[in-house]
Each structure stands twice: as C-alpha cells, then as structure tokens.
Image (cartoon, rainbow, N blue to C red; front, side):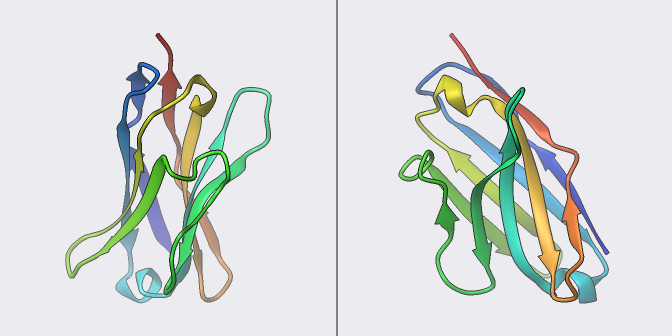
Length: 121
C-alpha cells in the first residue's frame, strides 16, 4: 500500500497562485506500481471531481475548468516520490478541498486526507 499526504493549501486572492504537494510513501514495490496519479477536488455541497491526472506515460489530462491554469507534475526519485499541482490565476470557483489520488496496477486505490484551498478577496 501507499500513503499520500497533501500540503500547500491555504487562502489566496483571486489571480494568485498556489502549489500543492503530495508526498507518496510506502513499499517501493507498491510505489513503482502506481499506474495512475491524480488530483481531485470537492467543493462544499458538490461531488468530488477530477482536476488532473496522468498515467505512467503520456501527457497529463486536465478538467476543462483548469486547462491552461493548472499544471500536474510527478517526481520519481530514489528517495523522493511526489505529485504536484501548480495552480495559477486562481478563481473563487477553485475553492475546494483538494485530494491526492493513486491507483496501483493491482487496482487498489488510495486517497490523501485533503488540503483546503480557499480563493477569496
């Protein structure tokens, strides 16, 4: 199994930027078997929605609402595995709890505890 811990959320004014981080830990065998990594978000009173995702190869996929503003990246180093979400030109409608997500080759799915992002003046 893997553990996902998000950080980097906070309060930001409209037009501002934030960078979310998701630290990935666990057995090396499980970490290298991650076949999909993603960021989701859930606003109050709404369903959880996909923000950005990527597989082992290929370019990330983005929700239409964040295309051109958000960038997903992944770090795979010997001693550090992490997923990032760079968020630029933030809007009030981006306010939500953001969750890190990973799916392994065996089908197991893992979620982080979430980090709050609030965009307000």
